[in-house]
Length: 237
Length: 400
Image 1 (tube, chains in turn blue, purple):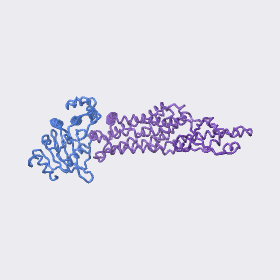
Image 2 (tube, rainbow over the protein chains, first blue to last red):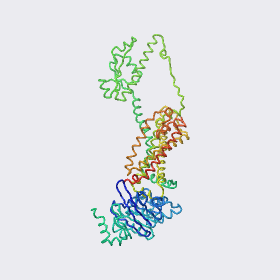
Image 3 (cartoon, rainbow over the protein chains, first blue to last red):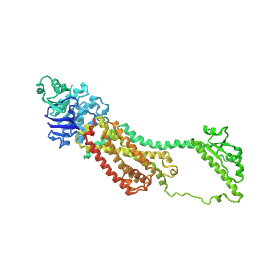
Image 4 (cartoon, each protein chain N blue to C red):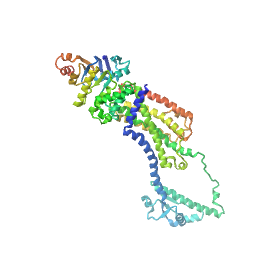
C-alpha cells in the first residue's frame, strides 16, 4: 500500500507539487492523470526518494519516505523515462540491478533467467542493449524493475514513444502485476490507457489534485474521463 | 558506505568503460604510442635535417680571392669548406646557391706577412639554418688558418705554440651514469606521469556520470537501495584505476621509446651507458604518487562530470584541466626537487611533479614524500566529500 499525505515540492519560487495526497492499495492500478508539466513526474520522483519533499510524506509498504529512504527503495520497482546500459547485454543489465537490489548471488542467476523467459528475451539475452529495438529495450526496463520482485511499482509514462505492439506488452505487464497483488502507480496523459488499466485515478493539475476517485466516481461528474479532464484543466487552452 | 555495492558499481562501470573504443584510445593507444612518437620522431626529423647539412661541406664564395691567395689555398687544401665561384656572390647567398660569402680585404696577404692583424668578413644569411651552420664551420676553418699563422710567428722567436696555452682543462664527471640518464628522464617524465595520472581517467569520469545522465540510466541507478556514497565510490574507483593504467602505459611507452632510440629518451651523452633501469622499489613509489595524484583528480573530474547535463557539456568543463596540469608540468621541468622549499610538497599536483622528479633522480627525501602522500590523502578526502555532496544535490543531479 502507498499512502501519500500532503506532498509538496518547490523549485525556487515555483511550487511544482502542492499538498498532494492519495492512497493506492495492493492489487490495484492507481492512475495519475495530467498534462505534461502538471507535476506527475515530480510526485513520482519524490515517492522514489530521488527528490526530497519540502512538506508531507508517504508511507510505502510500511516504510516512511523521509526516515527510511533506503528501505523505501527496496519496496519499489521504478520505471522512469530513461534507458538501459547500452554496453551491457540484456542479461548483464538485469544481473547488475539484481546485485544492486541485494539479491543473493545464489538466487540471482535463476531469477534473471526466469525474467528473460517471461519477457521472451532469451533470444537476445546475450546481445548488447545498445543494439536492441525500442520495444525490446522497454522490456529490459520493465524486467529490471521487477528483478527484486517489489510489492510496489511506480511507472512514469511507461508507454510514451512506444509502438502499438510494445504498448500492448506494457499493458499486459501492468495487468499481470496487479493480478499478483502489487500496488501499481501509473502516470499517464493518455485517457484511454488510464480507463482500460486503472481502478482509481487522480487528476493532477498545476501540482494539485483536481479530482480523485474510482473511475465510476469520476465519470459520475458527467461525460467520459476525457470530458472531465478537459473540464478540469481545459481553461488552459 | 557499502563496499559490496561500491565493488558492484566499480566492476560494471569498468566493463562498460572497457567496452567503449574511446577508452582504449585515451587509456592505452595515446599514452603508449603518442609519447614515444613525439620523443622519437620529432627529434629524428630535426636531427636528420641537421645531419644532412653537416655531411655536406659549406659552399663558400670568395670576394677578392686575389688579395689572399694563401688563405684560399689553405681552405682548398684542408677541405673544411668547398670554394665555389659565383658571379654575384651576395645574390647567390640570398638565393641559397652558396652558404657563406667570404670577403677578403685588399692587402690581406701583406698584413699577414708583416705580422699585422687582418679582418675577414664572413657574410651569411641568419634566416637560413644551413647558412648559419655554415658560417660557424667557416669561422672554425679560418681559426685554424689563424693558428697556423700564430705557430709560424712564434717559430720565428723560437717558441712552441703551447706557450700560449699555459692552462689545460680536463672535465671529470663524478655523477653515476644512471644519474646522468636519470636527470634527463627527470626532466620529461614527471610531466608525462602528471598528465596521464591526473587526466587518464577523464574520459571514464565523463562517461560515468554525465554519460549516464545523457543515456537516462543515472535515475534508474539512484532509485536502487544502496546509498549514493557507495555508488559514487564505485565510480570513483573506476576513474582512479583508469588513470593508473594510463600512467603505467605511458611509462611503458617511454620504455618502448627507449628501446627504439635510447638517445631520444635519455639524451645523447647518457644513452651509451644508461640502461632504462628504474629500481622496482622506485617504480612502486612512482605508482604510489600517481595514485595520490589520480585520487585527487578523479574526484574533481567526477564532480565536474556530475555538474554537466550531457557528455559534451562535461567535456567542456573538463578540458581546461589539461592546461591546469600541463602548465605546472612545464614550469617545474627544470627545477631541482632538492632546492625548492618543502612547502611545494603540500600543493596538489606540484607535489606529485616534484616527487616524481626526486624518485627518478634517486634523491628521495622521505619527509617530502610523506608530505606529498599525506597532504594528497587530505585533499582526496576533501574532494571526495564534496563530490558525494554534489550527488545529493537535486538541482545538480536532475538538472534538465
